Amino acid sequence: MATTTHTVTNQPPPLVGYDVFTADRALNEAVERHLPLELLDEARQELSKLGTTAGSAQAQEWGFLANENPPKLRTHDRYGHRIDHVDFHPAWHRLLGHAVTNGLTNAWGRPGGHVRRAAGFLVWTQTEAGHGCPLSMTHAAVPALRTDPALAALWEPKLTSQIYEGEELRPPADKSGVLFGMGMTEKQGGSDVRANTTSATPLEADGEYVLTGHKWFCSAPMSDAFLVLAQAPGGLTCFLVPRVLEDGDRNVFRIQRLKDKLGNRSNASSEVEFDGTWARRVGEEGRGVRTIIEMVAATRLDCVVGSAALMRQAVAQAVHHAAYRGAFGGVLIEKPLMRNVLADMALESEAATALAMRLAAAYDTDSEAERAFLRLAVPAAKYWVTKRCTPVTAEALECLGGNGYVEESGMPRLLRESPLNSIWEGSGNVQALDVLRALQREPLALNAFLEEVGRARGADHRLDAAIKDLLAELADLDGIEARARRLVERMALVLQGSLLVRWAPPAVADAFCASRLGGDWGTAFGTLPHTLDLAGIVERSRAVV
Image 1 (tube, helix red, strand yellow):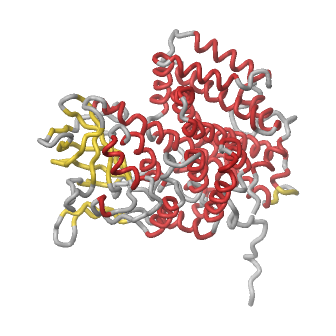
Image 2: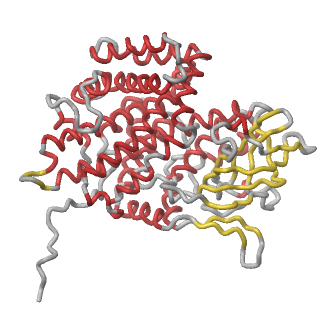
Image 3: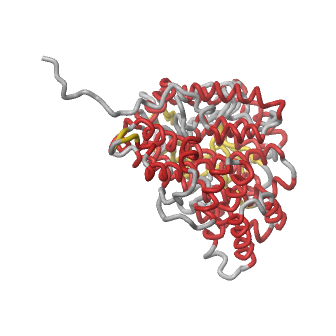
């Protein structure tokens, strides 16, 4: 006898089979305003193609499989030979390969490259965030290597190649495309990299050394080469460590274990030992931090973009669910209180996207003024946007209720991933202190920042008041370190407000300024003034299948 007790009703369809790029109006508009007109059509076509794949059932399945089957370490082969190999699920390679072939490691050598790559990174990260780590480090290694023209000439074409060769370790000369990793953190120092104890002993050949030491975090250990910091006779220095030497022999790169992490589970984060490991110096001895700092800045921007991607996907899922789910006599999206919650999260997501794309555009412009602007704006954005990611994803999960708490929804994976970017490449205090250093040492940076936010002056009285209050904060140096987080938060909010007032629809800019700058806001999402155009904000954020 047929049963009728398990009829499924009032469940939304999966958010699948859509173009992730085209459905994101805020991102579309950012690409349009930051790219030259002659590049726009080609970029839109590329991003739409990538977005269609990102929204497909197949790519979403890759993301689930890569996380359900995390990497496994094999230190030795069956005969006892040391091999230090990490096995990844085929889904990982499909995700990573698709990203590389779509130019997500190629920003530095093509017009509008940073805007195009950032938009693609924001789109593709929504399928699965873990594989973004090697993409980010490979992309970011380029400016560090450019301090040594000979090394840059050898490696940059392979770093920016759109050919993915998988995890097979071969001499770099035999590969058309390579991936890079980075090793700075040590257990005794953490973010204080000047406390590193890994030693670098010079060899007879100029620029060659052997390293001895332990790196506490080294992600993507199957990469072809790594930029690491070690103590040379002249002080802390940057080095390039290949996994395979030119003659085909394996370099000494002992993977001791893989980290068991909260999220980012598809990616292999490892501890590695160097013991007579061959390395090539990058830059001058004693200037390791200065050499690698541009790599750090580029990866920090990716933390902002990656967090914007997680927020966008979380909000898209919440709005999609609310558009189909009926409760208390109507569809959730039409309920005033749920609409307030969705609109509040959508504001956070759009502000993050606008800021991330503005930073990417500054990299493309590459003027002295834009470089000065980035010096302050990147750590401020990294501090604030990455910290907003967790509350947004948690609230979005709650919008799905118990359905969101179930692993199959994908929301728990977003929530586990959400704190990562706030920790990676320097946690909140590190970013806040970096802003203070820039304020104290680089007056051009503050001038460039104030010029940027000043472009919206006079357009909204709440923004004008916030700028005035920020100037008062900046003029008061008493207890500045203890106030650093408060100051950096205000800087990021004022910058986001300026961007939205200039470029977002009036409903979005009005709501942001009223809540984030004007103080008409509670301490949880869903506390926006009820007089705002909340329905318009929510509809703008909806990903229509």
